[in-house]
Structure formats: C-alpha cells, structure tokens
Amino acid sequence: MKGDVSSRIFVVIPAFNEARAIGPVVRSVREAGFSHIFVVDDGGEDETLHEATRAGAYCLRHGVNRGKGAAVETGIEAARISGAEIVVTMDGDGQHSARDIEKLLAPIMEGKDVCLGVRAFDPKVMPRGKIAANIIANAFIYALYGLSVRDSQSGFRAYGKRALGLIRPDCDGYEYDSRVIGEIERHGLAWAEVPIATLYTAYSNNKKQRQNFLTGVKTACAIAFK
Amino acid sequence: MRDRVQIAPFTGAIQTMISFYQIFLAGVAAFFITASLKSFFRTRRPAPLLSLLASLSIFVFAIYPDIAHLVSETLGMGENLNTLIFTGFVIMTAALIYLSGRIDSLERDLTRSVRGESIREFNRSKDK
Image (cartoon, rainbow over all chains, first blue to last red; front, side, top):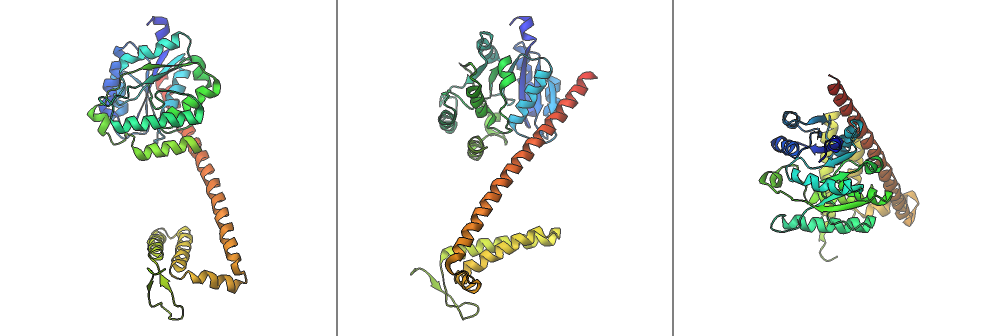
C-alpha cells in the first residue's frame, strides 16, 4: 500500500475484556503495515487498555460498558477527528486476520463506499449453530432492508470517506453490524463483499462475553423494534 | 372443570374450586409479595408498596376469581368491569411504550456522554 494512502487508513478495534487477545491482534495489524490503530475499551475490567497501548495502539476508553456498536462509533469518530479517510473495523478477539485488511481495502480504492467481509460458512471452520444463526440473520436483514448480503453479522469491514460521512446507525449493541446494512441501503452507497478468513480459537469460542442465542434474540428485537 | 379440587375456603361463605392455573398465579403473586416486602423493609421507600398492592390484588383474584363479579356488582358496573380492566390494560401498554421510548432516549444520551468523555480524554493524551 502506498505511503500517502496508508497514512489515511485507520483501523478501529472495539474490545471488551480482551486483554488476552488484543496485544497479538494489534501487533498483527501493525505487521500488516497499518500503524493508525484505535482500540476502544468498552468499559472492560481487565488490562485491555494496557495491553493495547503496549502493542502500539492508540486507546480510548468508555467509562461504562455501552456495547460493541457504541465502541465502533467512538473509534470511527476518533478516526474522523484524526483525519481518517478510510476506516477498517475488526474484532478484538483474534477472529479476524490482519492479512485480510488489504482485501477489504481493494474495493474501496476502486471507488466503493463500503466493503463487507464475508466469512466462510463452512462446518469445518464455523460451528453449525453459528452458521444457522447467520443464515437466519441474513434472511432477516434481507426482509428488513432489501439488501442480499452474504454475511450481515461480520464486523470486519472497510468504509470509504463518503460512507464515513453518511452512515449513522445510532445504536449501541450487536445490532450495529446489521444497522450498517440498512444505512448502506438508505444512502444508496456502493458496496462490495470479499471473502475473509475466520479464526475460531478456543479463546474466542469460550470467552464469557461471546454472543449466544439470547443475545441473538435481543439483537433481532433491537433491529426490528428500535 | 372436573380437574378442579374443592377446598375449604377461609370464610366458608364462598364455595370455590381452584384450578392448577389459579394455584400457579397465586404462587407467582406470593413470590412478588415477598419480594416487595423485602424491598420495602430494606429501602423504606414507598415504591415497593405499589408493587405489593398489585401483587396482593392478583393473589386475591387468583384465589377468589368470583370476587371480581362481587366488586363489579357492588360498584354498580355489572359486566362493565371487563371494560374497565381492558381500559386499564390499554393504559398500561401505552405507559410501557412511553417508558421504553424514554429509556432508549436516556441510553442514547448516556452513550453520547461516554463517547464525548472518552474522545476528550484521548485528545488530552495526544496533546501531552
């Protein structure tokens, strides 16, 4: 990636009690060639902030837990203030590979406003329950917004300048990723999808704050009724 | 109604048969009565008393459902008690919708405040 372009690319990583994973995630993003990394600690109680700072990220902290969506928006706001023209969002638990950032950026460089990462819905890689949940979520999003996306729940995305100025999901929780789809449709943004790797580790599968059936129902209600 | 078990009522004046549904409802109401009393004695605030009143009403109506007709006749409303209950239900639903909207608004304000504070702190640390 050319130097002048990469100085305008910011990577935003929301994190909640991810002290174990955030250091390696930040270091992998730096090794991939991106130095503007914002980690937003969403009111966690562990050493996430300390580990992220140690790994070389700029850190922001929510005084109280507000949700993943709120943390992403805070990071994007900080990136905008700092002069970002392209923002990549990714998860802080190590499920996304920093090597895929270039793949996400390619459509943005070609003029797309948003690029969505698409995970492989392969039972060898992704738990079957998660595959089913994602298929249902995609159908739900299509019914709501009329956009047929292959992975409506992936948080690994890239946003161009126009999208950064227009997209305002105005929500705090896990429904953020779905609401972004609605914003894409609402503003008629140009979007693309690229396949990304998903790394399901023992840590990400067993962490206390992972999504489950109840949070899925809560997210669906938040999307439909709020 | 054959599955109803006849019990000896407290007063003996009203013959009633209680179904499993009534026992369940009375049990739930009893739980909330206990919780309201505990909350009141712990906090000494009047709010749990409202919950206590509601739970007591549910308990009484669960054990003696005929009391609804008795109250209705005494008040001179006849079958209009159903209308009153339905109106009450509509009012409660409207109140719930209003409260839900207020809670959403407060949550948004809280997030804006938290975000503002974290960005101010970030800018301060950049300037150092």
